[in-house]
Length: 151
Length: 65
Image (cartoon, rainbow over all chains, first blue to last red; front, side, top):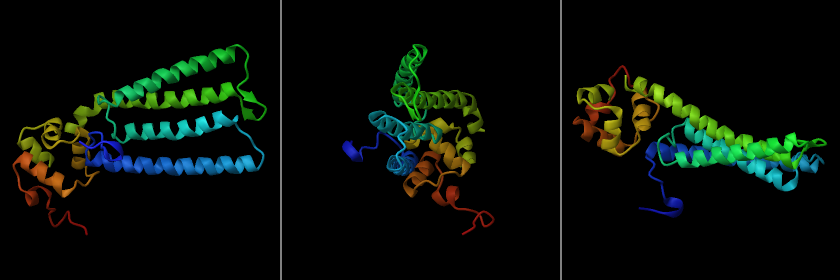
């Protein structure tokens, strides 16, 4: 069994090929997001506070990759990847509750034209919940459509 | 491939387990969404008890180079 970068995590040949495509898409997304952010910063437009800005870009790429994983059956529901999505959902919902409680306490989501710290946390929590939601939908869909595949 | 699998009385899950891939990969091959490697083709043929050209060689009407 191989470990490290060459470890295939028990994926078959189709999954490995698809995983490569997802990594490629994620890298292009990161490049585009970093270029756009750099351009906006040079133009004097700050859309989120420093660390939170990086956090949003990071989770954007990660969660869209996780969604693509589920939608392309790279990580089929019922496998060991379930734990990752469930943890993502639990922490996403926790962060969403914290963000909403801060909102109800009167803290603003925006700070002028930029997102505030709470706004950025809300954006990250929604991204985390998105991948969990896609995972749940695919799981329900798969349960009802497995018989159709066999026909 | 679907006909050969049905003739053998195997489900997609059975075939997937026999050749060591996920059921979704068998679904993709049967739908024509994924072209398996020769190595996987050979494994599938062994599991179904058919020859490689019998299962994967296209008929004249199917072959469009």
